[in-house]
Image (tube, one colour):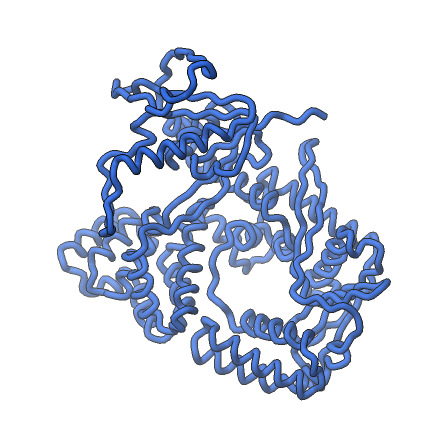
Length: 584
């Protein structure tokens, strides 16, 4: 089958990426692109910094007014307008308690909550989280702010929310930008839109360079908020622009087209990019095209409707996430439990504060990973490794101090029981691999077209023998019955058994393990009342594997059709489905 030619449209500025995407969309031409944003200047990022600036300094009424105007605190338009007037007039006594009770609660929590916990709580109570979840780029901006805060808190051992907010605000002052990118558009499209910077190292059959003007490629009168040792001169700027132009031009393997508009709809005149005249005249031909004016961005929004456009953007983003990053069993379990949970936790990946349960699990995973590779695997040696690793882990954990202390106390008390229960398992013979990343390819279909997903997972332990490969997955809870693991009881959904099946599919699709017997098992590492930490292996049949593959296919159909945006679960107490009603 003959391969389709590859096409790139390369521009100088990020805003021109948006213009090209809108124009292509308007004319029914599928395309993909990377959309970027600076978290400090993006409206969602700026709004969040206004929020924490006010919470750290309640005297900053201008920041409070900006949060109200930006849509926080779940206020209607009339009340918003009235409050902004009161705030700016200095008459804001009692506003935080009577009009915006969430502020009073946050002002109380800022003195006692964990640093990251408080940032996430502030987003929830203020209504910021709902705003951030309305499109993929906003969600990515919010996720990046939390990741930045976590890095700062861990690096400087910050526990206090107030101190962390001060550090975040100081970082914003000192950092010029902090950019994020997401892929938008059709992941399977022939046409890719990108900036010249983003095109480095890539090649395409055909390349188009629209907006090839001095005005688009060479900035005018730009300033800097920093004092630099040497101000960049015009010659440097021209040299940098020339280099980028030739980077873009040489991405073409067969043909390149340069488009230089001479004026816009307002009759503003442009100058063709000066580097065009440097090209060898023997290698180029010139064509004059009639002008077509209009605002593709405005027309697209008016034609499609904001809400529908938002949904289409999320659908395409979800397809990009799955085709580029792949599918984990956690994401599959989220989808089968609740399509709304899948959207927010596996696609938009809404930030969540660290929990005691997850941190205890992470600490024990890390400790047992070390145990597998140590020489002394006696009970005493295992206990010593668990104790030292758990203490070190919680020293850098971002949990509040009182939660850390309780978690460490529990894990250290359980360490001797865990060592005694698992000593035989931890001394298994064979080649041991811990925290192993494994991938396999899954070929699905939608609308008669092939959809290839990369299945992936990080396996806690793989013990590879000559004819048999054992896979162990830790669960930081007490042992469960076989029926509960398989989801055959009222309170269990079978997610753990699905995980074992998924891991067998992963290893079975890997040439290294293809001809071996693969036996996945669950290891429960929280001792029960009798000190037991059972290891449970369940037989996995071809019918089990087919069932999980069918579930993956149902996920593909739901995402590619967009049904996952409208489908809900049967749990009347679900926290995710009401969220979807608010944001979509």
